[in-house]
Image 1 (tube, rainbow, N blue to C red):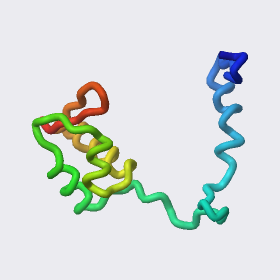
Image 2 (image 1 turned 180 degrees about the vertical axis):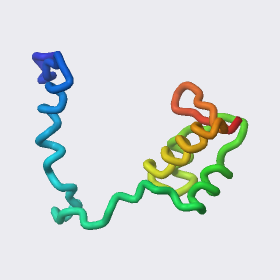
Image 3 (image 1 turned 90 degrees about the vertical axis):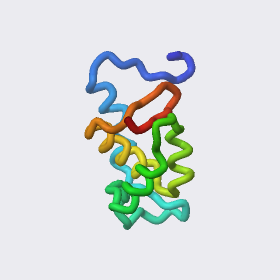
Image 4 (image 1 turned 120 degrees about the vertical axis):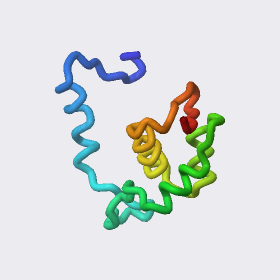
Amino acid sequence: MIKQGATLVTEAADIVNAVQPIMERPLMHPAGEPDSEPFESDPQGHDRDQITNLLGPAPISIDDLVRMSGASPAIVRTVLLELELAGRLERHGGGLVSLL
């Protein structure tokens, strides 16, 4: 893999050094302008309700939840994490989730 361009990592500092140039760049819009709007990852009440209503006892793909809810992947994953921390979500293999 090193021949293919992989970076040898022996400690956490190696990872920090590798990603530091990426982290210092501002987020850019496709037009090349810096992103002035904050990234919306805090779900609103209607987001929580909509995503929870799409869930049931049958496993559903997280990708399908994003598509059906119209919410961003970050919001869907945040709601799923909240449900999991509350003990109401079960994770299945293959990126599937269901309500308990």
